[in-house]
Amino acid sequence: MRKTIITLVIILFSLNMFGQLYEQRLGLRMGYTSGITGKIIKDRRVALEGMLGFRKGGMQIYGLIERQKPLIVDGIHDLQLYFGGGAHIGFVNGIDRYRSFNGPSGVSYYEERIVGPVMGLDGIFGAEYTLLKVPLTFSVDFKPFVELQSFYKLKANFYDVAFSIKYTFRKIK
Image (cartoon, rainbow, N blue to C red):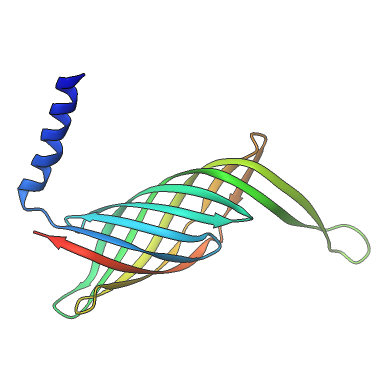
């Protein structure tokens, strides 16, 4: 056990010795799933993003891995596209509203209370603009997900669009 811990510590410290570029960001996500988001970008290619999201009276923890594709990168502008996927786990305590086509009026609605644990798979697609003189990043993303609610109901959501503002903490070269 001791050898395993020492080996892991050596590997973690040696990763920082290769002169790679890391950016760390922390901010707010405002959309269907709102919350706190943090991102670590390695070599401007791969990013790990974690979110603490709130929706439907509950809380979820998200883990995403993303691929970064630069569109405009010069001394003034930094615009990137990103895409990827991941998973989430948490709980909800809210109401789902469904539309049904029956009756003479054609449309009726019914509501169902949803309470319990959720777990699911997520995709993410977005664009990110970083101000180079001020350490702020603005992003717009689309995050569809499929989840199992209360261990019996499968639900898909394809309209989780959000706007995020993130602060870039540091760059290490």
